[in-house]
Amino acid sequence: MKAWIKSGTPWIWLNAGAVAVCMIMVVGLIGLIAVRGFSHFWPANVVEVQITDQQGNRTLVVGELVRSQTIPAAVARDAGNFVPEDRELVTRHLFKQGNRDLTGRDFIWHTEIGMDAFSYPDNIFVLERREWGNFYGYPVSLSQDGRLISPSDAGFWSALQASVDRSVVLHDEIKAIEKRRIGRINSELEQLRLEQRRLDLQGVSGVERENHDQRIAERSAQLNADFGELREELDALYQSTRRDSLRMRTAEGREVDISFATIVRVTAPNAMSIPAKLGQYFIGIWEFLTHDPREANTEGGIFPAIFGTVTMVFVMSIMVTPFGIAAAIYLREYAKQGLMTRIIRISVYNLAGVPSIVYGVFGLGFFVYFLGGNIDRLFYEAALPAPTFGTPGLFWASLTLALLTLPIVIVSTEEGLARIPSTIRQGSLALGATKAETLWKVVVPLATPAMMTGLILAIARAAGEVAPLMLVGVVKLAPTLPIDGTFPYIHMERKIMHLGFHIYDVGFQSPNVEAARPLVYATALILVLLIVVLNLTAISIRNHLRERYRSASD
Image (tube, rainbow, N blue to C red):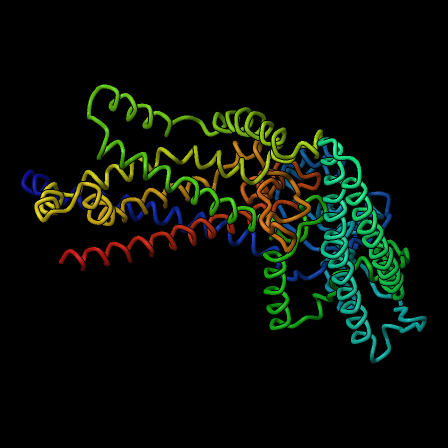
């Protein structure tokens, strides 16, 4: 036994077991997040069940069965439910009944006491709406261009889908006009206003001022005329969206007319086949990845958050890489190795352990208020008191994260430079190369994999940070992306959305907890996958560089 222990075999098995346990935990966690999150997009069957209370009144409940749990009978009684005295445990079911505009809430608990067996009628429709969440009910009639179509008619379903498709197309046209064409007009009008304000501040007068004023007035008149035409076009589109409507009957027997202007999709889950549900499942995931959020971020997609996260990481990488590498090269290759150099290294190591919220407070005070405020006074005086860079935005968020991850890049690069044998430097110098040529043509290329390792670690940390970003540029909902078709195309002053903050907001600030729960899991999985993709990209680049310089040295 002693010989076996001294051989080191037990420690090998112990390490292997620890790695296996860690892998199982990681895979299990990701699997749990995936199941809890992506199961939300599966078109679940809609339950219809009759419930009889102790007075004999019967209530019809229609909705999706979210989950069931067994609780003590005393807990159910405290919640106001009737439970016989001889019962110690009772099962309760959570239904997503939708129709929040009518009932005031999406979800409701019902105990099994007095509950009939579940049924799944094929004629229950689920309407995904842009406001007020889903609607569950039974179709009564379809009003299409003044013509009433009954659900019993042969062409009812095709006519219904045609109205839905038409409303979606019209909504996309309206959105394109409002965000793009009208957005460009508003941006140009704002630039004209700022130009006139700059003329006032500069004290321009006389003929030159008259020429400027005339040009601004003519251009403003043209833009206002263009806006009027777009306004008429929008009014016509809005009127067209209200052409068709669908009359639905709720579980309580109330009939409601729903305009197709508010409808995103109409499905009948109980009548759908498995292939149809599978197709709808992938459509739901795709829309989650490519659409904007709605309903206080509890519905819709997360594309702005994905875009903001990727953009911020790329800007941060562009900032931190040259500064981190230059600092590491100076400390390792040029700085005199003495007390001051050791103090600087210790400071860099300590910076890596500073809580991230401290960086956020520093970024808010120094970057936003000091630098941004001075930039506004120097270059954007005409826009004051409205700040341009003196307010949190993409640039300051990226710069704060670059400062946060700078110690990681410095330490990794220094370690890579230290591992290069001195014989390589000496050989290069012996062949007549200068110190600078040796550094930049021999040493730095060989240390590139270590630099990429530092960048990989920096990306992994920056992509998951939330606390500092809440202070320096990330918001709950950003109306526009930081990159668009308006000059100068990249707007570093704009606020952005971020996946990490989106998870925090949906999970802890949402007014509808049950509706937000699956989206928290789905967004968390997307964030993990995004970090993995960014890291794998950097790792592949590092491995390519490593093989390249290894073959060159051979």
